[in-house]
Image (cartoon, rainbow, N blue to C red; front, side):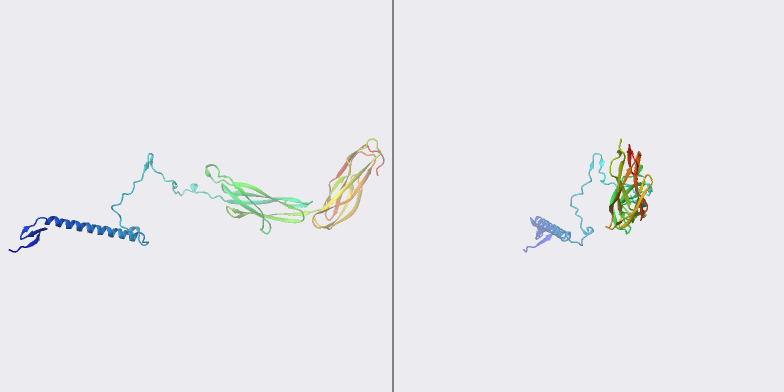
Length: 319
């Protein structure tokens, strides 16, 4: 009798009779096959992930989401409610009253004192400028410029904050610049602001004409002679000029006589002074104030101050 074997419904049969153990062996093969397939698929997923992780051409949309990953953490809340953002963004508005105001210099007005000068030198000219800003706080950087727009001096001025309710308030400050002049000269200045914005003032100028001048001193103290006959009064003078020139002058006595004229040359360059011969006055029996003035005749008409002696108790003839 021939023995036949075959598979029926997943079981091993022999001559039509199921054989024991056939079903469990099949299940083992199926389980092993499933495990091998699952391992192969997982290996392929891991390999693809490693290959595409560093690929610059791979975008977030190309990545395969990991359904088995941990869920994203939910946002935490404090006892008082959800966290507030660190820097809240102001709501935008078209209301001009809430728009920020940029501080800037709006005006600069310049003047000089004196605007012209004739007289003894050196003389000091004062330039003053009124700087006005739209609001504050703001720092203004400025420079004084000469007639050729070269910088003569520079400085800064600080302005405070805005007025009530943050409304723009025009603010002003006055700045000054002194120029000493020792010879005939016309001085030009403007003021230029560079920060927070660029603006230039009007131009201001002063014309200086330096004249020679004389200083007279007396050669002793006031006289109280008592019973003496008379007193000898001594006067001395120094003439100063701003540059080379020839000066003619004369002495004028308070009782009327004029002594001179005389001339003196100045040729040392620049400002210079020379002492000129003094005068002596023999006073007689007169009490009161007696003195001299020096009158410069050329090149300018200039009168010195009157310098006097106070005399009391002199007797005898005047000379």
